[in-house]
Image (cartoon, rainbow, N blue to C red):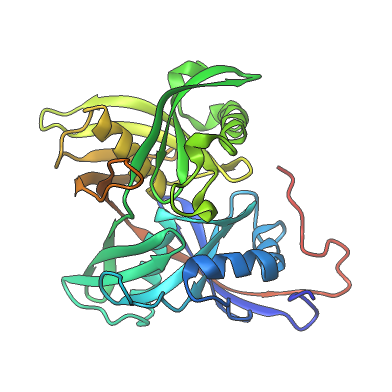
Length: 346
């Protein structure tokens, strides 16, 4: 049974984090069912995929749109802190397990809409996402969020120097997890730099690497198969190291079905931190300045060691960025519209 008909009125509030859109659904849909946010993600896949498509597809969205359904938090048994709320993330190809830019935008919305009481200068809360519970600190001035810092789920390296063969050539990648699995590849292997004019090549090759690794053993989560699969390819470009040890890199994440992250990618930044830490390219406590394809930045660092997961060492990471509101929407559907739930041209 479709959730979209002539009576549909779905209300949203839109943000961007570092240029990456985030559409927060705040009314007009059935509540996702499940004990945990990960369970609710499965429910959304089975019962609310038409709503996802309706809000993501053209003409209401576009191939690079992103969003979430807001849910209650997970039960608190055996978890750190008390959950404030949950988020089920969605994109052009389904429902993701993690989203750093969405976490930053969602927390900004929750505080600025007064869903969460603002405490100045720092509001602390816990947010539940499919990959787990995140500890979040928001810097607040005059009830306005200046920056959000989230401590991600434990991140780890799954495989290094893995050779992936595509029609664009062979690429050496590192596979790591930051709430989702990513393949990191030095963009020099593609013979281009990370600039908008090179996007077609970055998308094509990034999509091929992702697909090649989607069923690979390196992208199997050791504890929950629902967290498995290669979410995307991160092309990175080294930009040097400052005297104080700050590492600067430009990146672009090609994820889902060729979707391009305009932000520096929050969960991808955690995955990159795990690689940099293991390769001793980023000192503990030093900052990674991650710059996106549009010039926006996240700052991030490794906090310390995390728990061992299936004999794999993990690291605890923190990623910081800022989100801004871009609009408020009410989406409707004309039953006579021959384009139905919309379309994607890419």
